[in-house]
Image 1: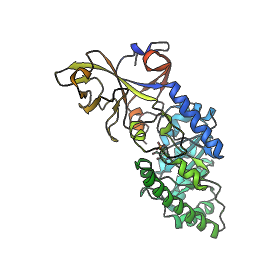
Image 2: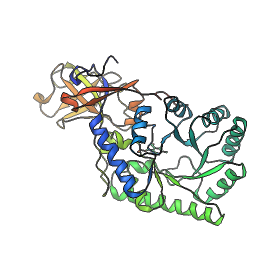
Image 3: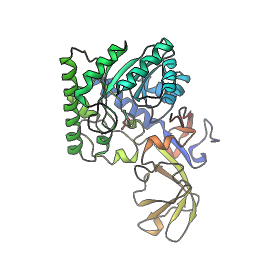
Image 4: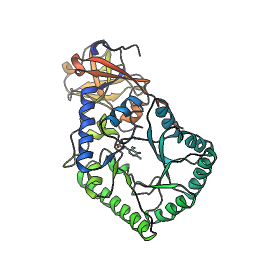
Length: 369
Ligand SMILES: Cc1ncc(COP(=O)(O)O)c(C=O)c1O
């Protein structure tokens, strides 16, 4: 990207990933306020933005640290100065666990486990490295992905302690619930998740094991986890950028209002009688959660034009933008969109007349191991 600090937004080459820093900062503050008013720890998920600078902004606004999903993501953010990381995911490979154990010498680190083999291998790696970290037992609270059944949490926590490791609490995240559109559906899903957490806590209590923390929740449901009184730490990630998919959710009562802060700037490069073609296809924005929305132009519909193209159709022909015109897209899903780009351009003063204030590296881009 040949953008530079001080450049006018109008001059940013396209396609480019642009952050509206004013909107991002309002989102940052809104979530920080929510967490502090509820007396909850905030540990945002950095798999979304993959940027050490943004992680530091979140920590400066009261986050205790950030979550990551992969070992290499943790390494990339640690290399850029992030000092408190939770790998909210299982690592089973021994070579990777050796890297985790080495990283635990440099930063305050935690990790999730959901098997006795995982505990054994983690303990062996930590012993070999002579390092320590916090271990969260992940329970499946309805997603049907990782995690032990809630009633088995005590057995695994006991195994953690037996291996001389520090049991830090429960990892309890329901990803699919985040995207249930209606409030009633989300409330029902997280209600069942809360019941699963109660089952795990009861099993721990019977076993005489103290549970220091329950960590989890995402941008679609965190008000419900907070209301339950069970979770002590929120892991929301997408609230900071707010993609189209999240904006399509019915808002939960009591939730702060988050704004779109992540955009793809694109340009009309071809016009036909029935449509316009822009220079942003699915190499510039992920389409796994659906197509982007055209920002500020509800009269225009985006159709997938392939890797490098987007097709815009309007209800009325004069609505179609002209050759060379700028078109802003709100990506369907922020996490994989960010991963497509080496940098994000942080803009201050709005998308119309703002200037580039910061070129933000996607430090953990491609860190999928
Ligand atoms: C374990 C975990 N925690 C938190 C999050 C953040 O969720 P969201 O981006 O929906 O806020 C995710 C996202 O997938 C996740 O996998």
